Amino acid sequence: MLFLSEVDAISTRDSGQPARKAPQQINDAIRDREVRVVGEQGEQLGLMSAREALQMAEQQNLDLVKIAPQAKPPVVKIMDYGKFKFEQSRREKEARKNQRVAELKEIRLSVGIDKHDFDTKVAHAMKFLEQGHKVKVSIRFRGREMAHSNLARDNMSNFAECCCECCTVEKGAKLEGRQMLMFLAPKEKPKKQSQGE
Image (cartoon, rainbow, N blue to C red; front, side, top):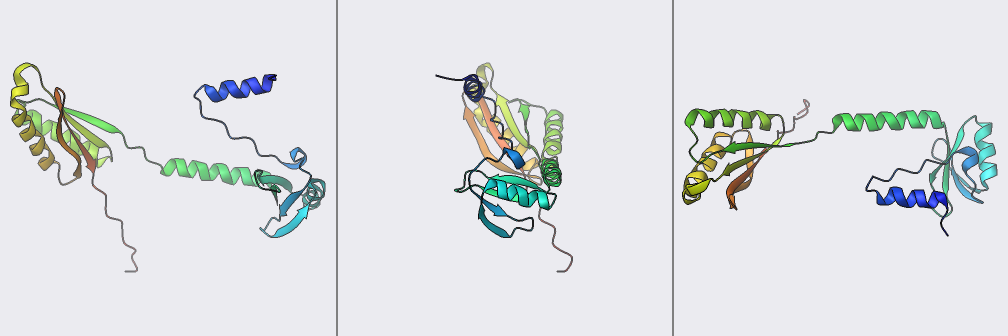
């Protein structure tokens, strides 16, 4: 027999949405018989009942937070929970700010592309690569152009040579069905050396 809360848990788990983190248990929500207590500075205070640990935290005007619920016995820490949540959100915000998402940009060429059009496409690809994005270069063959795949391969190699100063060829030109594909990745920038050297 399923209860309503179990049905909700099953439906959200199967919906394809990422599972939410269970909220941390603090103070009176901790109902374990015995817990391992860690002090505010990280010192081990030993095993005791949850009620005794809560009294110790209240004496110091701090909170009791369960930090390792899966451990046997569960581990709780005496800390300022508001300060902990603030620092945790600040660290997450900083990590998101430093995270860069590289997109895959596509440049389409043709078998009989003109010189000026080719140069324009190279300039666009260079701009994308300098921004840190990967570039997919594609040539689609229409009609009888399939007989001239060697011209397309030449265009691809010329394109890679023109972009070679700011990229590496991640995957060389390869014929797949009615199109030829090549993938370019930005070159790794050398890490700045410390000024002490």
